[in-house]
Image 1 (cartoon, rainbow, N blue to C red):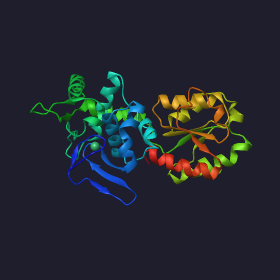
Image 2: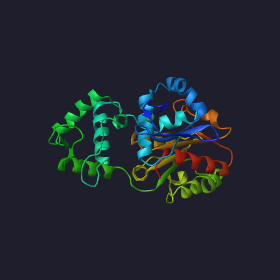
Image 3: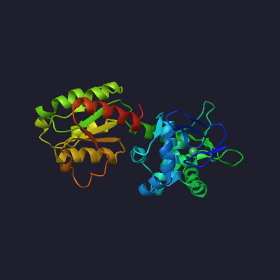
Image 4: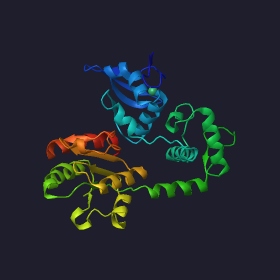
Length: 301
Ligand SMILES: [Zn+2]
């Protein structure tokens, strides 16, 4: 018998070790993930530093797993993984999160698969809070109890309608928006670094705003392009107000943002965004390689 290092669930045959000292863990609560031996040892202190509980990490891993992301947990990328998920804080956000988790898991028979013992971590709340939020959704006719009046439960017409509406708001495209200073100096970095990395990860030609034409002005066209993007790459090698605005606007929309900066220019980074984990690049080729790894680690492809 082995306990999952993240959620402490008992796992019978869910663990195998490889020669490099990492464990493959198949946890019914956290989903499948790989953790290096070192990380297992330091997990508790690292999480305390990040002010994240094991329960929250368990939910983050599970949500990423459900979206098809392979979780490889190391001491170095723990913070990045933690920051890659938006944890709902307000009651309305939590209710919407629960609603989406319920409707995301509808099986072929039309039943909601959400299982209160193994899936509660996905919605970041305990049993009692879940039941209260759930009752609010029932009151809104967005879900209904089944005949035994127990969870799991059944979808409703109103619920399906709302779910489709929410899905339509999220860009389904494989397009990314690139926020950077467009000048001859950065042309090669854009072409051989960003564009090639995006192409390799299955993205269409990215939205590119020529700063010369736009003069750094944020207009409706830029907003519309960000709205249509499922990823934003922001390069802060040169301090430009527009790039901060574009990155902040995308973050507000819960669109993933990848921060990059040229080596030697990181001192220019603005105080407010310095804590985000920037890819520090030396050459376009180096940027390309790091970007591919980051996209694969943070975004569903
Ligand atoms: Zn677990």
